[in-house]
Image (cartoon, rainbow, N blue to C red; front, side, top):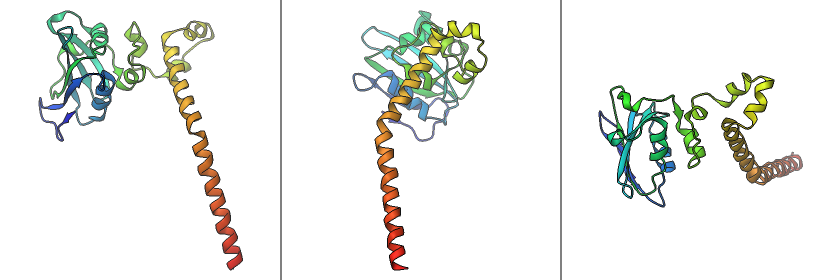
Length: 197
């Protein structure tokens, strides 16, 4: 993965190839790390199916639009197609001006959301919009709770919660060992100081 230290107007910030070891998910992680780019264009080329397209990225945090070359697809459908590419190349370019309208054509979607659910993108973009889970939960009524329970948004929230719980379970023994090691060390030190004093 090639990387420029100080992006200038229309400079390539990242570029590389998509293959078994580098998926669109890894590319999105790399884009997320480039916080110095306020507006960027991520071009993805699929060498197997012979198509290319672009994603509009705002503040290094949100995807705000997508379009296939030749206008074959645009919006969220183009985003899903481009993030399904497994064999091709990508290029992330700094774009100093406001993004062109064809790359600013849907509600903001967080890169972190796309990264966490890739490759299982939902059918519609509404689930991925810039509304966080806490705001959704605060505004819900009892009647809506039944509907939301089975919605795609709640599936994503449950998946994130399951991932956090799995991480917590994996690291519980390590945290317990660190706690008890510290406790034993402090107890021994206190005992030694008590004998010496």
